[in-house]
Amino acid sequence: MWGKSVLGADHGRDQKPLQDACEYLCEHDFCILAVADGHGSDKSPYSDIGAQVAVRITCDVLAQFYKDLFKTQEKVHFQNVYRMAREWLPRVLVRDWRNQIAERYKAQFPDKEPINPNNTSSEVWKLYGTTLLAVLVTSEMLILLQIGDGDILVVDENGGVLSPVPQDPRLLGVEVTSLSGKNAENDFRIPAPIIIDPSKKNLVMVCTDGYTNSFSTEHGLYKAGTDYLNILNNHGTDYLIEHLPGWLERTSDAGSGDDITVGFILLGQTTDDPSDDHNSGETQYDNPTGEG
Image (cartoon, rainbow, N blue to C red; front, side, top):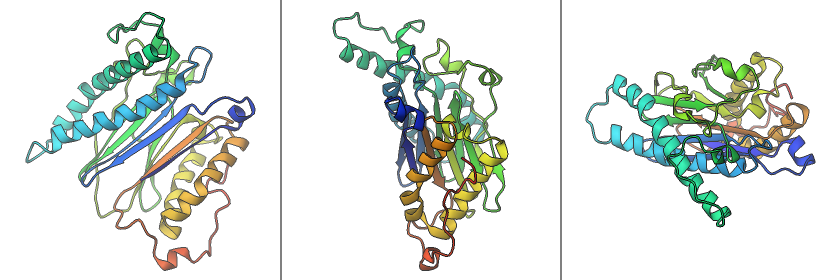
């Protein structure tokens, strides 16, 4: 599991801070990847903090979700997981994010009136507004959730690409659903869990819209997913970790200009070290996407 956030080309020129955040947690029987994209607008001047808080609490909440469901029952029922993911996760994620933001606000502005985390209509939440995308991987299934823009792709070992999270038609305009929204818990998109075959070496890729918007077509984004899986298969993780920051920086510079975060979970992975023939160097990737 790997993830990287890079400052967007436009944000670098404008001397704005990085608004994206990425965090992951991997234990013996589950892995979690969380990615967030702070809005970075005039109405959200502290969205970098909002994004950092979002990924941190998401790892904690999903870890607790796993332990409550998967560690306390001999057999986990698919429908029960799906129901709890839809009903419990959004409510707890929004609650914990607001609690943490209220604490941050109090620390930043000790002279101002503290915020009540239960005040869903407070304008303070918008100061820290952010999207959120997350994946929980167990030995049996993938559990995905998203609020706001960005993409979660699942790339199979034959190069097929699946985009499991339903599209939100509101994101086609200027509106972006957000953790800062009044009814944020209702804006999460959570598809049915995906049953996985642990013998298949597939890739989950999670990216913010700075990466998505650097492609002129959906095909270009999907090709990036298959390129990354090929890189991991042919060169191993060290090669990806070494080159990923430069690839993402060039993609932002030639594409959206926005901050970019991309995170990966390699399913069916047997080792973190590539074999000797993977490092033959016969194929070098100047930019795995072919765009940007």
